[in-house]
Length: 637
Image (cartoon, rainbow, N blue to C red; front, side):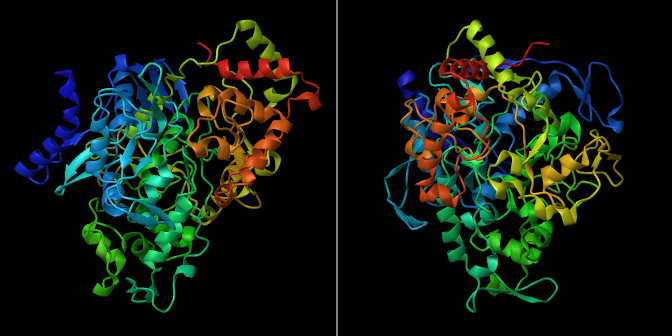
């Protein structure tokens, strides 16, 4: 029987198709893999109680109408389920609009690749291309197998974190948190929850989609006008004004060229029309506030973690959600923004055609699967919509119908806070770790990486850190649409009632200078949050741009000799490059010789706080320090 088990991978797609054919159209069968606990390397430390604006207590401090979120097993179980299963409907954007499965990557060939595993696991699903295409100036041939970095657990019939759904007569794929923030352990074949999927090839897969241009705000597009000329498509906006859309094919090519340069395991989460991707973060969040790379997620439940959790689906998996702010953020009207995103959509329902003389906003209103909210994902409008606030930096909140506002975001936040990293593979002894701790303190690292979670929970100016400046300024344009932090009470049902309870999120205690740094407001050039170092072993490559990578040999310096070649960055050697100026110089030199890395601003420069011979430290002290960092674990309460 076992030798035939792998056929179930084909069967799952067939089953979905048959069910879809014989049932009513509104029924949408779905398959998603959620590993049972015995197939997971999980170190959950569950604590029950209540969260009130980030303050956690075992006793009930207030009611839900006042902002309290009850943390119990029901909420934590929902958080884990959300982590693996919930897409908030982003399969519409990814499949029907961006065309993830309409180019050389197809659902059939993805299924074929999974079937070819015959029930075994992989950390890099290699998919055979269904057609020959020229993308970003490169030829990809039919039959060629590409590295996706997608993880498939043993016995699973779908990728980790990629739910499949049969809807509208076709197979659609969405993404959940697990696609980026969980990985299969090659040694135990179990799923590591919270560990970065360090080789996920998001740039390549997005480039091979047929409408990568729908994601243009994450690419290097200085000015959309450069893609317009006398032959560009003309639209009539809803105000009756004639405007032009960018040439769809030229924009597509420009976006593809940038996405092909993203290193594996990197993603550009900023919508600043600059290409500044960095490595995907882990999900070990307890004590790591404020959240996001700049600390912009600081307000609201769970010390801002709910705000950070919301970002993935409220912005990064649905570009259309930012349409109401397009004038302030991107310098274009809502009609031009929507038209730009939809003019190459592979599905006719969402493909905007200027020749039909209908405004893009009117066209999308008819096609919109989630009327009443921006974009196509399942969302609600916060009280201060369309303003951006500390409690809603994306301007919208993802929430599924039938649940409460922010319920899934709160749940996944609470659950992530229970996670502890797996034990590192690098062995050591307690004496070395204690010696490393002393070096850590002697070198002054403790001034920023302080406390039980090795962070002072502060934002440091980009001038002091010395890393990528454009990413630090990426929130600058939000200043003109910044509003007061208001949200609905956590017991508010979705869809919203006529008069929902509105709460003012406490922000008076925040340092105004820290807010300026996080959001690059006023005369600030922005900053970077001091990250927790818990679980740093699983986070390589390092630094705010992800540019510090060294392989298993010290001769393998920089991303060109590691990640770009499909080799994992070695945590020990990469940490050594963080503290040793001579090794770092080799890393920076290697990165600088890559035109692709230069184009996406990955250098490995900055954070020049050295613990090396020139600073009076021996090799033995360096070794001890690194072992301390690798084995620094979340202290028990």
